[in-house]
Image (cartoon, rainbow, N blue to C red; front, side):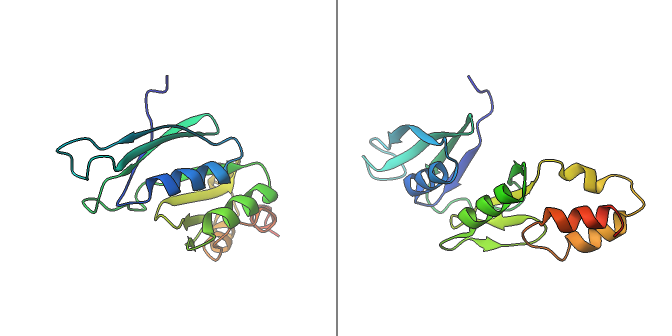
Length: 156
């Protein structure tokens, strides 16, 4: 049993969000749904929460009403093995209303923030003689391009 489960509060659209995330991650699946009962903050029978799993990680998403808003202060980091994976996740998570931010960050159509980065992203931030060159290149990007980062890292 996973002790820590990311829990996403949405005003509405929990089922749509869970289905979307399960479609983006190829092994995603909805594991359960719960509904509001009597004397709840929503009408009885309204979908309350959807639990789902992607990449072996459990998540919950709530139809919680307008009381809390999502912020980019917390994001989900996707470590990608190659440019093809970066391109895939970037395209899927920005489609239909998502938006590109900067430096590998994006916001999906539900307002959830994701970082789509190479799995070895930390190497570009190490104490290297070309650190400034890497940062200059990085800050000009929205979607990360591994070849461009690698070239800056090598000082080319």
